[in-house]
Image 1 (cartoon, helix red, strand yellow):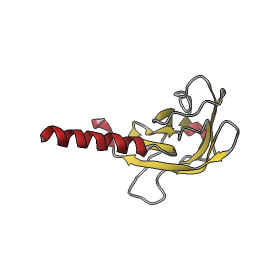
Image 2: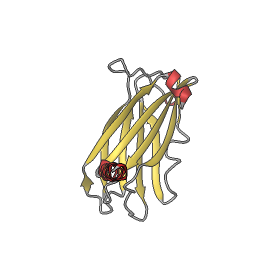
Image 3: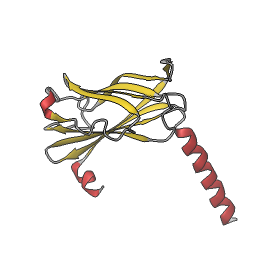
Image 4: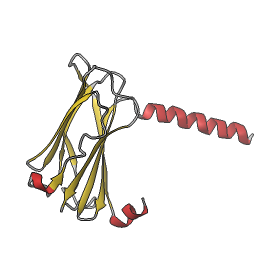
Length: 162
């Protein structure tokens, strides 16, 4: 009986895991770091999208010199044509697979940005990153639906545990 229950639980978990990433998604995660905040950006494709763009609005980021964007799109595969600009308090990202191959249907890291001197507080309204101008497209340039998810800034103590 225990084995049946374990199998049912495992099968249910696999079904839920597969359905969790059935849409085009952007995932943002922020974490306190010494001297600022680290922003990690990830995407998930629906099996049709081969390109995406989005803007991350960052409260307290007023100049591009306050952000180190060298790793912004560094995790993307080499087949991607990509751009990352830090302008007017925003991190702007665009990427397209040059072969029109679809994005993976699993979580794929885009990259990270260090936000120097920026402290985010999940408990304060207006003091969190937010997504804007999100677009996904297939290999022919047709717009596709999407979802966004922002993981609130983590406390410094929690960051030390990870």
